[in-house]
Amino acid sequence: MTLTEEKPLPEESPLAGWTSEHEGELRIGSEEHKQMFCRMLLDTYDPYKPAVIDWPELEDDALARLTGLPFWQIAVETEGETSMRMQCAADATKDPLIKEAISLNAFEERRHKDVLENMIRFYGIKLKPEPDYPTPTKPNWAFTQTGYGECFDSFFAFGLFKIAHDSGFFPEELVEVFEPVIQEEARHILFFVNWLAYQGVQQPLVLRPYFHLTRFYAVWKKAWNRLKLARGTSNNSNMTIKGHKALGIKLTPGTFMDLCLSENDRRMNCFDSRLLRPKFMPGVVKMSRRFMGD
Image 1 (spheres, rainbow, N blue to C red):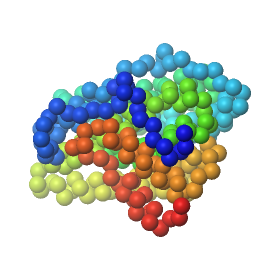
Image 2: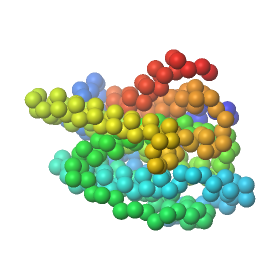
Image 3: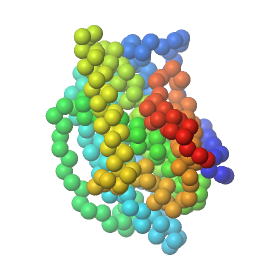
């Protein structure tokens, strides 16, 4: 299989596709919209347990490649802080259905951290102690920033995961362990952009300009942060933006961007087409491709 071929999700997977029972057009910000984006997340929950994952034994060269990757520290810390911020947002949410959905989101992020930590222990990867994460004083603002960060990171992670799968960098058994994690991130960002749109419509008219101004500030703050990571001017490493280089795979920037776009489309197409999709990163990349070669 080449890096440009698409591989469908297994039909038996609860993440393979979801369509709402609601018929007809969907008005963004309506009760039907809220029901749809919340049920999307809740109905596609995958009850896998990190503690019972059967980690494959690796050949010496595969083990060396895995343990030599530089981004496991930031990966664990990112999942830890993300889950804490999402749980704070859930605790501050009054709507019972949205509260349930954000709580599940937080649980799944904690589970992603558990998967990483179990893998790290099994393969003997050495990490520094995890830091304490400051509790956000403005939970919804923290959730908004975190959600945009997930949108940026997931876009590149989709392409990176495709590379890891098709290149043979890792054994297929190890890659398949992380398939539910990657598709859960697709669910999370889909939920986030619809939650954000719903919140915008629910604001009183007089407060909507301020709400959209804070959205604009949040997205560009995260975009600037990711740009610094990509240019190497931040203190942290970033596994999604620089990941294909860490994997030692030689791809042109244009080829990598095209792969991210196609994988983003494939994973978003699993869900009801009436739900909103993340647009910022795909839009920026599509515009950038006009000025890039092959």
